[in-house]
Length: 121
Image (cartoon, rainbow, N blue to C red; front, side):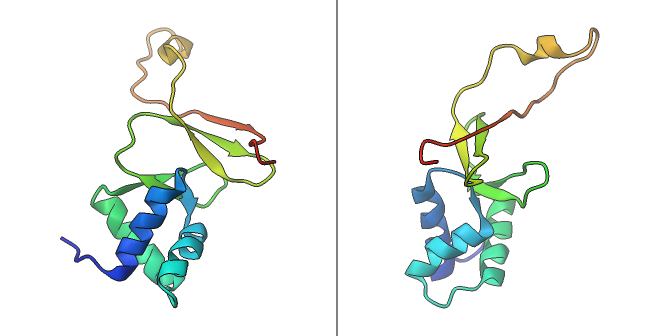
């Protein structure tokens, strides 16, 4: 078990307060306000450890650097703003997507990302 450090606590707090998936640089920007001198290598090291222990999980969108979100979210999807590139959680799921699969195929999981403009853009 990883020991709790000021850096890790600041990163966890940044993630909890964000309310959306964050890039590592965004985590650094927010957590760095609490822990001056926090470096990107420390952020990446802690994000990796937090993914491994289930505290966080990665959100990977095609052609993008991974973002990170709290690991205790249930099944959900994402919306990416085409203007600011921020990613937001969508806490709903369309009905039975398995019906879109070819006949005889079995859907085991799915991921859905919507693209458009967020309310701030």
